[in-house]
Amino acid sequence: PTSALADGEGSLLVGNSGFDPLNFATSLVAVNSYREAEIKHGRLAMLAAVGWPVAELLHPSLAKAMGAPDLLAAGAKAPSVLNGGLEKISPLFFAGVFVFGAVIDNAIQNKLEQNRQVGDLGFDPLGFCSGANADDKKRDYALKELKNGRLAMLAITGFAAQEFVTKIPVIEGIVAKTLAT
Image 1 (spheres, rainbow, N blue to C red):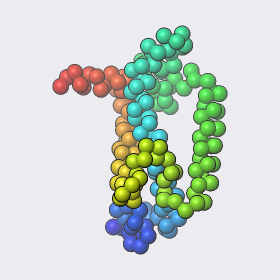
Image 2: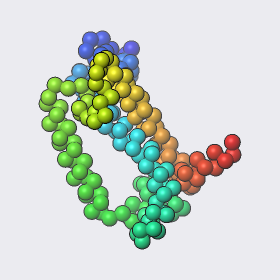
Image 3: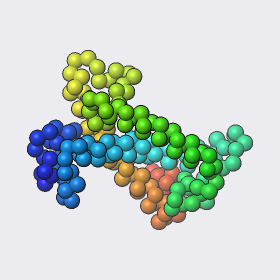
Image 4: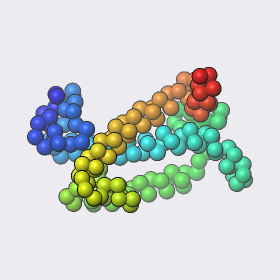
């Protein structure tokens, strides 16, 4: 471990291996802030990793069935900064997403004042982390969420790079690869 926080309270964080080659982790408060951001981005990336190919697959037929315009970028690719196509989406949508995100983030920041684990918003409607060994289950699920979030962030980066380089939609690449095997 190279981080100054590899020992003590920092070592108790789920998924902490002490990897911090640039020494950003100067205190436990900084590590908690970075971890909160990592979990937040991981959750968004997990949604996007599913949403990107599903949008490319289902959007054209759903838009046609509803009589709405097709909002995919040229070549049936998901709209993105690299692909273009963002100009087809109403600025009101982006404003709404921004306001919704700000409200949620504000609610989360208010919860940060309370005594809680980083990333734990107390949302468990199906009771997966209740009963005997609840703390062990929470740590296990937190580690799984962290690792899957990291993988999803890489996947989204790969989706964007693949569409930019190959100029074909992600879903076409997946289908072509699946049929080739």
